[in-house]
Length: 79
Image (cartoon, rainbow, N blue to C red; front, side, top):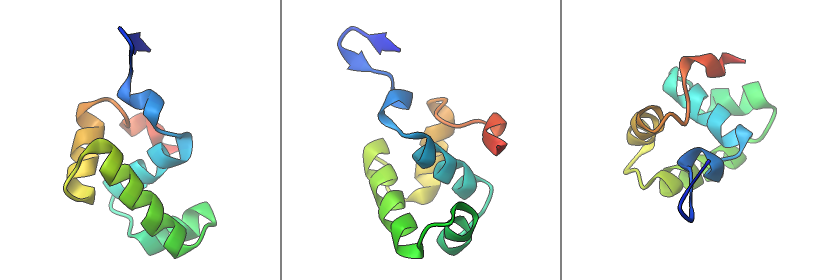
């Protein structure tokens, strides 16, 4: 989705990043996310920091709020 020369916010995020955002939104810790996605805890920490920065959020809770507000994630992202 392009508007002028700017990309849609959704296009800036990989599927894995959106999945992590959804897992945060439903209350998972970094450790739990790592276990569910079969990646290391440190990898999750790095990805969460990148996601927060991409959204211009102040923390992970604010990132989830912004993600829902911008239709980056939805309740349909369960799978």
